[in-house]
Length: 265
Image 1 (tube, one colour):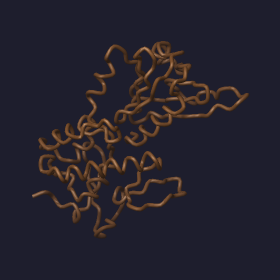
Image 2 (tube, helix red, strand yellow; image 1 turned 60 degrees about the vertical axis):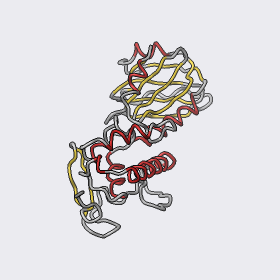
Image 3 (cartoon, rainbow, N blue to C red; image 1 turned 120 degrees about the vertical axis):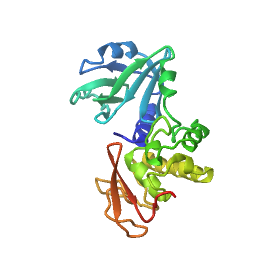
Image 4 (cartoon, rainbow, N blue to C red; image 1 turned 60 degrees about the horizontal axis):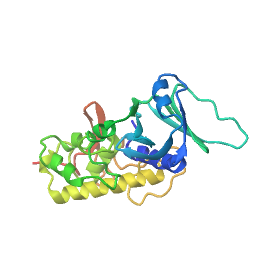
């Protein structure tokens, strides 16, 4: 599943190319034909991300809500003068066609039209988004500071904090020397503020570089796999050179250093 930086990067790109443009909206696959007909021919006012959710706002307070889930994919193509619009590839649920670009979305978990206050009912369920300027940090602090649940679960709970995925979770906890099983209520305010600020910085790097980079002072990479992490799927800790432990948390693989991240006592 794409982590928050990927969705925000897509939202920012789509906002630049679609803002104030009238879009032709279709469902080449056919499964979203009714929804596409509602927004086809409307002007797109803005595109924004809420955690891992993409929201396209159209005139008339009508919204397209997309959540890619595990298997969803976005394809963006720039239209070339005097050439036909490219044919859809695969089962395209929704196609957004503007004057200069076409966006195809394949296999999303959610693809729906929202009207009459339905957007608020969606966004109210999403926790403070690390990459949004309007993120309610106090709301996240109140949820975490009162919870007996481990930080490893709280950071992945999109109703608590939005945008952190599996790799970022492992890396953030290591960077702050926090064991995955540390209860949220054991985190003091200074530690929470440091964790929040670091998480924002890391996700902003992800948006800018289009890759998960949690290694400090990492330079550009020409490799196809551009993500650079400290301990995720690594054999040893770069800080203490001790072995990295692998665990399963809610069915997802996670990693920690037993030396640098001792259990909370």
